[in-house]
Length: 154
Image (cartoon, rainbow, N blue to C red):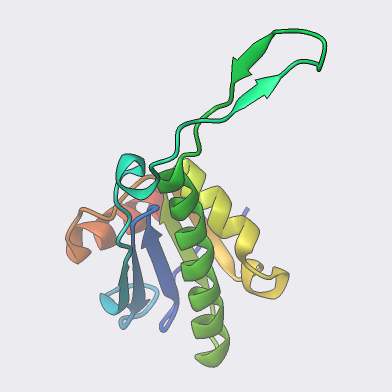
């Protein structure tokens, strides 16, 4: 298997359910240099600040007196999934407009799955490496070191 590479002008997506960075390799395959192209931050307050309704109740049958509570809606969680889909579409547009030669994605498992599922097949085919880790709180140079280290060990 061939080792993945991050060529010149390849894009790197680093994100979680609340923040996303689009980085571009301004260097080359041998000497990468990531620069920030776009940043996205989602204003997603906790669920208790978003919804005030009490969970609903379900009745087993009209004749019976059995009731059970329904699981409350987690609005915060829903918004994290929606955010991942929105930034995936933005990444898709950017990759097509700029004719990105390759993509790398670094995100925690749930966000990684959301991004992977939201990308069109032609853009998904450009993904050379997926890293199952949240790197959003790292400075860009540490993200660069981490991703290049993951490529070397791949």
